[in-house]
Image 1: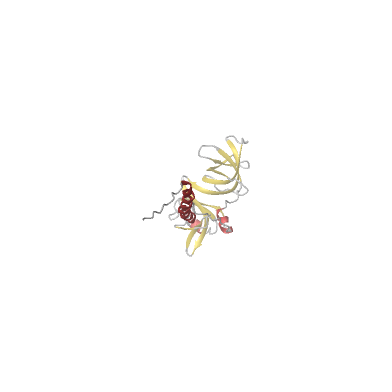
Image 2: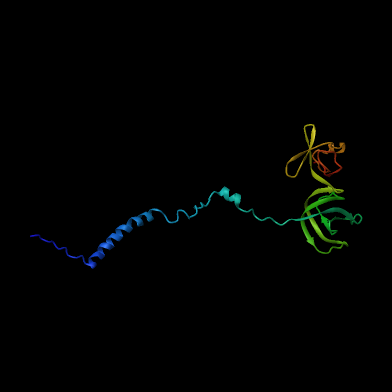
Length: 206
């Protein structure tokens, strides 16, 4: 006689805990893998390191503001007669400004740029609308020819001009009257490698 073994049916409510355990087991490796890779690795920018080098900061830090300096450019004229003559600068637009300087200005008839302080307003001189206190100046042209000014120096048997920047430019065909002015501040109209179209002494050698 054959004996039959009967398997009790599995209740649906008994499967629920088993399914939950299986689901957690299946999900846990994926969770661990996600934790091992930071989410912002591909998109986050590289961190910027703040510099504490005082020298680097000194280079990039803006310089302290300096007092404003005015400029004035034009042809220098002398109007009136001694002892009441006045030096004025006539700009390209025809306006005129009286020039005041503690030092002599041997630049009449030349085109000059001045640095200093400008004060607008009517003056006692007809046609002159402002006054200008000169701190420094540079000759720019003579009779429409570009000019350079600097200090005349000797280099061996040759002559050079020392420019305000500290650079030296060779001079050619220096006029005899200038050769005795080594150390003087001069102006030179025209290219420095040719004889000057015009020239003059601004400050004698000391």
